[in-house]
Image 1 (tube, rainbow, N blue to C red):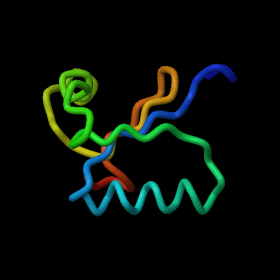
Image 2: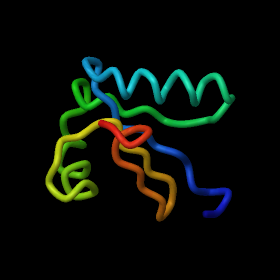
Image 3: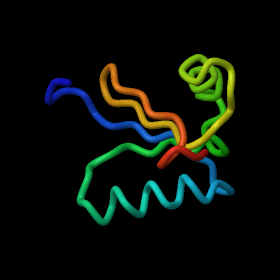
Length: 74
């Protein structure tokens, strides 16, 4: 990762795992950009590509790093 890589977190408002991830990131002072898929559905195809066709949230992307779900669930 380079300093130019920004953490992007794809979420949905009805996803408790998205809420837990955001709470932990905020508590740890981690800077991230949230993309709420209910507000920005144009990003759904990108999430499906990243996750292999799933509409799972949360999805974290930072450079080449991708994490689907949170703490093994999502």
